[in-house]
Length: 260
Image 1 (cartoon, rainbow, N blue to C red):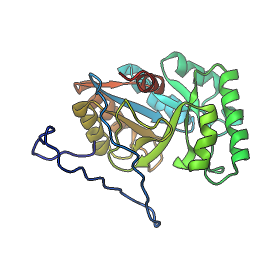
Image 2 (cartoon, rainbow, N blue to C red):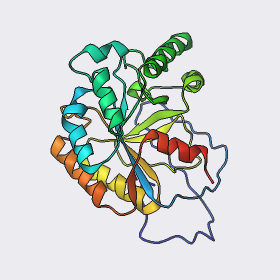
Image 3 (cartoon, helix red, strand yellow):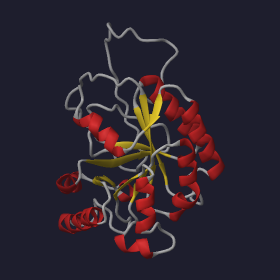
Image 4 (tube, helix red, strand yellow):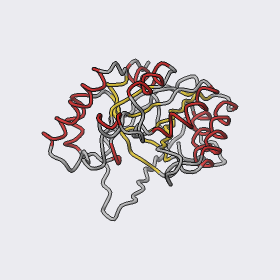
């Protein structure tokens, strides 16, 4: 749900449904609609707080805020497994500490190896290596993945589906939400967490319409991430909003897998 009109529609008398495609690239956008169907809604709305790249910024600044509100986060592994030895990224010990606190650690990659641009054999090797690293180190989010740079294509998705149940993302600088039943599990949508008002609106719409919004962050010195004070305000807003629950990828996948 992106927006609603002031007039409530009569859902028993729908004459036309219009699909609008937004395209931020220079190329043409093509969409295929296989079918349209109804899915039940959950009893509440959901928000996923998704942090990419395994940066230490999350551990040192954002994690204490999450602990204060008792909200889980979805953290990706560092861009390369070896980066856990780099002071810019979380160590294996710190990632385990966050997993024990309720966060999930999922697969990722590097924008130096875009999933749609490297060969499928290279991608297969990369995904196999990263998932093995997660499993060998006891991280329970190994079935899920975040595509670096949101880069993927049909060929990449075929390889990804060999190793992961759910991931994405289709990224947007504005409100992006999804239903919790019936979504395509490998092209989940996210909202870039650069603007607190946009993120609050995404949370409100997810609560009002019992959907899920996935908000994405990197580190607090990045233009694509709001600052720490705004982040604290955002989590307080989630805490004070009726009809919204912070969840992880495992929770979302379980709803998708066992939909009524």
